[in-house]
Image 1 (tube, rainbow, N blue to C red):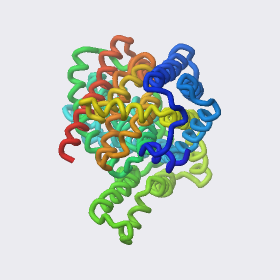
Image 2: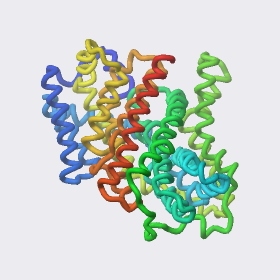
Image 3: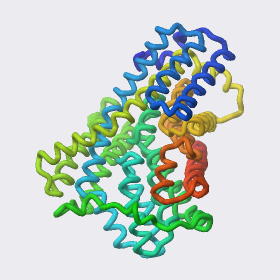
Image 4: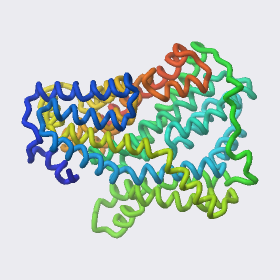
Length: 465
């Protein structure tokens, strides 16, 4: 389906591909999600294949013609790639330039050199927030873990006091702030304004990261005592470089796309005239594609050339940045197909019909749906995309700020209680040398705090904006 046809469907001006009743559609959703969960958790089938099969099962149980289901899934997959695929690729390139050039290490070393013992947890959450802005969670963790372990060991710090703030900074950025794949996919699904979502996401992310990071780390330190495992302290990437970019220029490069998108959002609010030249220019430079592309091009010089990279080395860095995101891009795309199938069989309209008599905020409903899918599948990205698909019709009549808050509510729900079906759970467990129980009492609780506190701030903003 084209974006126009999706908007028409949300406005209830076209018929869904099946006329099944609410009960049958409800059963279809449960079966589709159950198939998805079982394939991911029990058979360990790749999420891309699981989402594809789950979409077919969803349509079949709903009584939709299989050819129409295939068309809906394919259209959703294609539109999602068109909407967020290039942005994910550009974000990966920028992250790789940041890591390989030593820019990430430069940010880390500069802040740590100026932080005292008491302020170290706050420094860690700040570093993780800056590093996590352009990077995928897993990449950011790989960059941050060596720093966490080295600081804890050499400074004789508690691993929980240093590690929890770093994980909180990374996780909050991953769930709430574009250009991460989950928020981008949700923005595309409900047609939210990226600039407004980014601004509100950062506004919510800062206090949420503080509460789940430095504040909660005091409690986590009393619950769990572990020492940094020596075998997991790796060599840092920049140790083999003769020079690396400066702190100021690195931070400016990382923040460039954020600044450009925020300029667009501000001009749109202040000027509010599509024919105005200033707004037209701002709309171009603040478009996510242009903003991230500009940061990548600038980064080739401010990061790559500053580190002494030749043209061939920069080209190789760009090439190597794209291969690792292939799997994630396919998962996000298949999630878009699953979302479109949900919309086209009429599930979104069903939720709108049923929930209109509920005394439940759409923001809370979106959070609850994302929580349920997150707990079942273990994937924040799958939870975000699926919940956004279900909430698309409800977003049609919302203001631009409340649609942005809807995205953030879904993002907060997608982080709730990471446990044994989440790859991030095992990554944290192994890196920190903890048992399953210790990981639940620290990492899982921290993720739940982010989710609940994030929802709280979303609901508060909805009262004043």
